[in-house]
Image 1 (tube, rainbow, N blue to C red):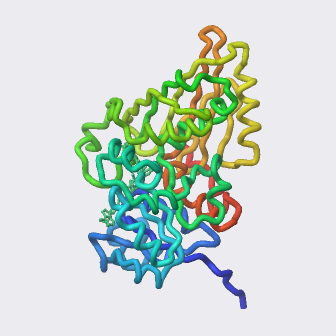
Image 2: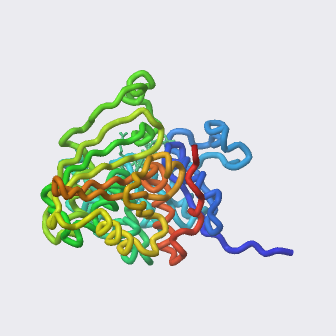
Length: 353
Ligand SMILES: NC(=O)C1=CN([C@@H]2O[C@H](COP(=O)(O)OP(=O)(O)OC[C@H]3O[C@@H](n4cnc5c(N)ncnc54)[C@H](OP(=O)(O)O)[C@@H]3O)[C@@H](O)[C@H]2O)C=CC1
Ligand SMILES: CC(=O)N[C@@H](CCC(=O)OP(=O)(O)O)C(=O)O
């Protein structure tokens, strides 16, 4: 007789959204976690696989209602894959019920309530929960995540962008005030809900900038870069919608503080900084990553080009928004919270082509 190892029981609120469904896909392959509750605010009682036939015979449960006590009886950890503003209202009840909480929304990332309300145009979460939530940028703040019971998962653009800039800012090799971030995203970043800007004919064969000067990820990026620089940082951050389903590419420009530093110097700086961090791949000098090279995986691929002619650095950073930018990093955070190897259940390769 074989004995089954104890598994952590997980509930997913917002399980019917893109982030929730991606959590289900990834957790199905996690050796130490079992999804025991899929939760919906609008379809409780109906069979999950009726709405998601690709999960037939994989998820056989009916959807649970958003009921912290019910979920407490079925799970040890809850992922909130819920919209901004909703997570802020739900998290306190799940924390009070004694569950570990990992929130995928932006509600607990910024610690300043006024700053959140300015950028998200919603009422901020309570200060007590904001102070409790650890900002889970795994490769940078993994030590703070270890043992935490409440983690705020970073945004998709901040993950690609900050992992691409942090080592250079921290080393003082680029001027933080000169940073320009040109970011591109696939459409799944806007979620499963119907929106005009996500219609096929709006997106297909189109490429457009959006939320210029107003993107809610701007203060999150600047919050982390300020930690690297040791002082406030202001960036130019522009997002573009591209006709792909998944993927983010952040192309970033900054002025070198010493223009004699070469691409090879930067490569070595980054290689050492991310040594032992399996999910950041610093690509060989002279090669530039593509979104398809990380598609469906938890990798963030980075490459660097220092141009002695202009005295500027260009950084390229790509992720899959639904994996490293959302569900994958959330599971990486769970692994760190539990004291497990951060790669547990996440070592699948990118899907190619
Ligand atoms: N898509 C992406 O690439 C990324 C998303 N995120 C963040 O993750 C979160 C989820 O995003 P995503 O999956 O794309 O969004 P979706 O819009 O696809 O899904 C959100 C889900 O939340 C549920 N929901 C809505 N209102 C409530 C409520 N009041 N109570 C409980 N559940 C509710 C809905 O399901 P139901 O009606 O069944 O309850 C819905 O399916 C968001 O905060 C988003 O910003 C973060 C990084 C990347
Ligand atoms: C295409 C698209 O609309 N993308 C979203 C990404 C936001 C997101 O996914 O949510 P988080 O803020 O929780 O990271 C946007 O730009 O607002």
